[in-house]
Length: 427
Image (cartoon, rainbow, N blue to C red; front, side):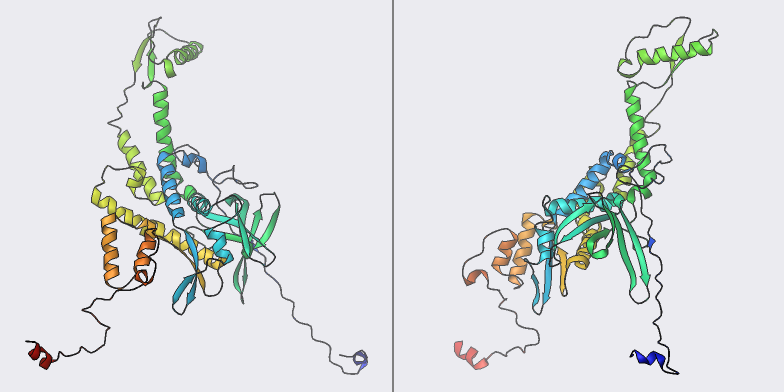
């Protein structure tokens, strides 16, 4: 539009584009379980009905929980994560891609891949989410991952009808600065979720079961702190004033409680000591603690025998449960982490996948029988089998050749009829 056009009679007024009003960004509610980890957040309902506080630290004080988390995090970290690219012939491992270098060789300057994935799984199990800040170079390639404490990150969502739901992360970095980051700057691996934004906190939702186990352990410790003696009642036929009752109670506690519970008590003023009976067997104290171990195995998703609960274990069901542990317990975690890595670090036609061969390797005899069947069927070559056993390749073509059974041929190929004249001459 020219400068003089504004003076023209009847000139149409310029039509301004409609102003787009953005809806506010809504922060998702995050779970809180440990005030020591959450800076600027308030703890939510951390006391169980048993009267004990349940948080990350108290949950780890239970031996069964500590062993379960150590097992599932350590075994998960044993399976390396690699980046693959799809090709016409199948797939190829991309060893020199930035994502492969980051997650398979060098996540940052102080952690190995095992350390990183053990931390990933422990955060998912204890907090429901794993967050890491992604440092990138000038080319935009990821070069380092810095773990962010779950309590220092809040997920914010924004919905657009054209783009759908977009997530942002309000995070406090290790240097104390707090900013709002786009999803490309924060690697988020969420656990089991009900809203698709944040994972559920297992410690918070299993608070009552964890609190019961902690209270039972505390009760046993207090019982043995008193020398294994039940509560004591001092009786007398004389009238005792409230002040004397308090003084007698304190004297008895100081003299005959704790390590000195086996000392000989000398009573006067017609005092008589009576011990309240407390039968551990009738109250099924041991059975309660044994059931709590199984209950904790349910919470963390491990077979009971892996946390040394062997009351109903046999050789056959332990072997089967070990296979189920990889398939049903670790399998969803493998898929969850690999999918999150693919979304964050993989390019077009690329994907991440865990190598779980080492976890499902049977005994030597079963493994060799499986190798022999694969070799006979022409599925693998000798060098491929030797690589699985960490052995050097056979030089020359002998290690790269594939067998094909002599009594088999390609499907759909017509079978040649035998020459009867040649057979007659041979006879």
